[in-house]
Image (cartoon, rainbow, N blue to C red):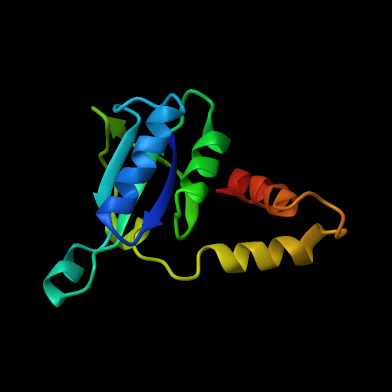
Length: 136
C-alpha cells in the first residue's frame, strides 16, 4: 500500500493544470494520476468531476496537498492504496469520487476539538486529522 494525496476537480483541464504544478515541484509522471470520479455524469450532460491523485511515498504529502489546494482542488483527502505503473489501481469512484461535504465536518470537528484560536491557519485541522488517521 502506498500513501496517496488526492483532490477533486470540476474539469480535466484544471486537474491537468494541477498535475503540471506537481511536476514543477518535483513529482514525476509516475507519481501523478488523473481519474474520472463520476463517469456516468458525462452521459447526463454534466461536467465530469475528476480526481487527481499523487503517490507520496517519498515523504512529500504536505507539498502535494499545498499544490493541489493552490491549483483549485475542491477538497483534499489522504488514503492508502495500490499504486502501480503510475496509476492508482484500486481507485473506486464510489468511495473516492464526488463528495460535497468532505472538508467541512472534519474542519468543524477540529476547531471544536482543541482550538485555542491562536494557532496558525490549518494547524488545528492537522492536529485533529493526524490522530484520526492513526485510528484507521
